[in-house]
Length: 341
Ligand SMILES: C[S@@+](CC[C@H](N)C(=O)[O-])C[C@H]1O[C@@H](n2cnc3c(N)ncnc32)[C@H](O)[C@@H]1O
Image 1 (tube, rainbow, N blue to C red):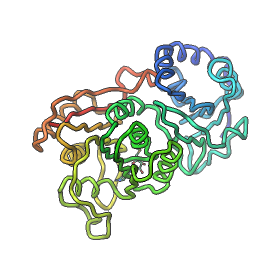
Image 2 (spheres, rainbow, N blue to C red; image 1 turned 120 degrees about the vertical axis):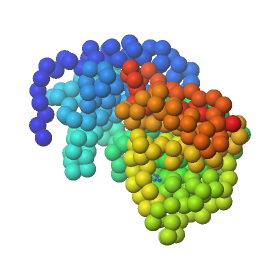
Image 3 (tube, helix red, strand yellow; image 1 turned 30 degrees about the vertical axis):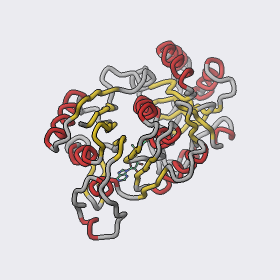
């Protein structure tokens, strides 16, 4: 793939405007003990297909369509060092052709960028590697607004973290004093990263449980519902019905497995109903929807209707978007904070 040469000065004005937009947010993040944020959200800040995230001293540049232009990585590096962190190290991952074109093909200015770095969010420390087995960063920064709510609710509570990935919400809860956290995901390697996050934050042994299983049978068993699909005929993790004080439900837009499909656009109730049934009275379900085509209003109506139909009406429902480092008129990511009656 060719790196195209066009006007090399275009990136700095975008970065300057982006920083101007983040003045208030950065002040807030500093008081919250957070040193990671999205520096440029190219989709809405003048360069669709480019994002730049700062994780502590690691600046992770990601391109999703066209690769960077000649000289641009060096210009981004100079800007980040001058305006954000003098000790920054940059890594660039071009995702358009991954995994056919592994990230290793692309230049990284400093080998140090490929070591494990530490990013701190809400006082919680997360190990971050720019390059690992997958393509997504180990900490999704747009979910910070949801983790902030998790941190507030956590002290003394039991927390069920569904579709946990590297456990960011569960580890956040545990570090903020949750008495018990379950991280549920079918990817062992992601749960292993979550475990290392727990160690890094000195979470007492026994607080965080890894549940290495498909979310669908886990959630249906906790809710006291029968397990469905051809997966029901094979061995799976057996659980008794029980309720949690806080449930984090952060599904991918779509996935399919032996226990059925996750389809956020067309069938959110099949996830939300068992989550409500597994939530203690007065507890919270923190649910997300990443599908841009689903409006906040339509999704809110689906959540309310599902809760009424299953006999667990909501006593409060707020829908948040991400923080100001993901600017958008109508953000794709919607985060519902539902209080269950
Ligand atoms: C968008 S990520 C979730 C991000 C995560 N909540 C966080 O805080 O970073 C989606 C995760 O869901 C997992 N996943 C997808 N379908 C699943 C299923 N049916 N059961 C269990 N895990 C699933 C994937 O392995 C992946 O880790």
